[in-house]
Image (cartoon, rainbow, N blue to C red; front, side, top):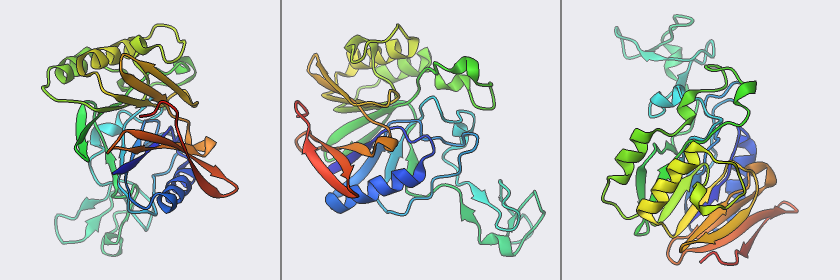
Length: 272
């Protein structure tokens, strides 16, 4: 069973759709997409992601997602066709939908969904089993440009991992084969970066679970390092038109690249 590991999107959903569809063409048995954060969820100026493929996408939050809106990420978000307003609700007096913005009913029951139904938000510490492998998802990272952003508008303190989230997660009796995070654990020293509390928290996850594979984004580059039996892979963002394909049956990793409008797969050295 193969999955695509997709890097940061930052609201570039057209590019994400193109990359995923090209990968599906080259890898017809692709079973899912794991996205490593910075989706751009409800970020200022970012519209919802309308997918035009059926493969499920499992995504985490990064540090460029609306963490306040993520509290309700499991809800189906609807938009009124009449006024394009948010927040459609069931009409208590009929089977129609009711829009609090234009107070319209009837025709607006044919609502449009802001984000597609095959997109699944994975909360911190959630585990998904694919091909007998347990994949843990744990979003969150530090914004180095926090001082240039405004809290509640384009920055939210919820980007930071809490001690309580880590404590609850490491107390669980579960085997983790693959880890999907937005940043890397500081203990791995994948990239030369200054000390960071969120990376230190991720180090606790590594110490507890010792997965064989760890994919992350945030840094918009490709970097592969091995540390204490684990292969750490930094994923490129979608603007680079590259992503990784993981075969969960044997841990084989291939780089998927778009060259001359054609998808090309190449084996990643050390990615087994």
